[in-house]
Amino acid sequence: MKKIQFELNTKPQLNQFDTLIIPVFSEGQTISAAADFGINGLIEALDKQDDFKGKPAQTLMLHQVSQLACPRLLLVGMGELSKLTEKGYLSAIQAMAKTLENSGATRVLDTTHLATPKGQLQNWSLYQNSLILQRSFYDYNHESRGEHKPKNPHLAQLCFMAENNDSHQQAIQQGQATAIGMALTQDLANMPSNFCTPSYLADTAIQLGKQAGFKVTILERQQMIDMGMGSFMAVAQGTDTPPKMICIEYQGGSADQAPIALVGKGVTFDTGGISLKPGASMDEMKYDMGGAATVIGVFQALAELKPSINVVGVIPATENMPSGNAIKPGDVVRSLSGQTIEILNTDAEGRLILCDALTYAQQTYQPGLVIDIATLTGACIIALGNHVSGVLGNDQTLIEQLLASGRQTYDRCWQLPLGEEWDEQLKSNFADMANIGGREGGTITAAQFLARFTQEVKWAHLDIAGTAWQSGANKGASGRPVPMLVEFILQQARG
Ligand code: BES
Ligand code: MN
Ligand code: ZN
Image (tube, rainbow, N blue to C red; front, top):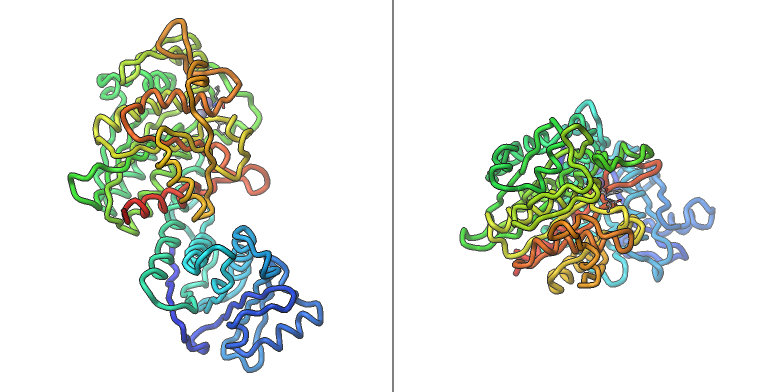
């Protein structure tokens, strides 16, 4: 992806730019930037004429404003100063990015970060602006998968009118690296399952590893059968497409430091298996590898940011298909952990592949903490909608840290409980546990299943069924929760 060249300068020369961006509040409140450039009068006049009143996310591009030393002036409405929320700010910056896309703006001086919403620091606005602007280049193009013809061919350089210091620079770098990671996550999740197979995910990881110096290891079907991953292999036995376990290692810390493990569900297509899903919207099950795509996107961002910490990614990848070889309801399998599972519904396949990946990650890497990321349950969409991911786990400190990272990046998650009452719903007469716990509390019983495989480690589970994808007119992958996880990892690296 083409990278914007970001800069910081408190005293920029306006004639070095072709576009100046100014935030405008409604009700006549102005910020100093407008006065600095001598356009207060112009903004007042536009307000009087009812041409531009600074309404939330309203934009106006003006050309050849007399006495302004650059040819374009872009006004961005912020609404009322006292009512500016984080969401309102983000909508305004998105509208600004859209207007830039449809213009020839190439060298831009941006001052919108000065309109930081209450409760946030300027770092936050710099991070969000660089993330949103860099993301505005993203456009899924099936023909040029992976290579982005930038949607905005002009924008090349963007200077924030702010002090050039380390913390501002870090905020911008984090925003840009996150956007680049999200683009990869979106590409993988948007790609149809006849292209984005487990092998394609593995190749993407290998490629990324070559570029960035990550160690990448791929386990094949026969190896995994021999190792005893009976649960993952039970799902994979129904498909001729080779399953893969993809392992990526980033070493930014000392060799003896226990890594963070990210485990991502990589079901490249979920038909439900013999417990076949209904036909409506089944196409969207190509994004059932959203957890895997998130892990790969996070590693892409790590390649950019190189934080001082160790991270491993473990991705079980397979299709979930009905076939003559597929698992059937009532089948019993033995997981890598030794615990046996009665598969009562073949559509609850995510937990079946994750449990072996969780065991494998603990045995192989002795991580300090494990986070799994999965489009695991439709119930999570019913409970929380599409705006926040579900988070559950066995370590409240870890959960609080994830909640905080989500709030900070506006890639939020919300905690659901775990407990013995829900665990009892997994009781089976024929194995150590069943793979479903009934309709009630479906997101919780799914996590309760995973909890049985993470008893010895700090663990959190992110259910991203609602957040990884948008349905409707703007249908497609969202790139979430890459922002939250990148922030979490950077916080952990800071100690
Ligand atoms: N991949 C689905 C969950 C899902 C559903 C994600 C809709 C995104 C949108 C998962 O494998 C699944 O099928 N879960 C079942 C579990 C049930 C059989 C216990 C579900 O949610 O219905
Ligand atoms: Mn399923
Ligand atoms: Zn699934």
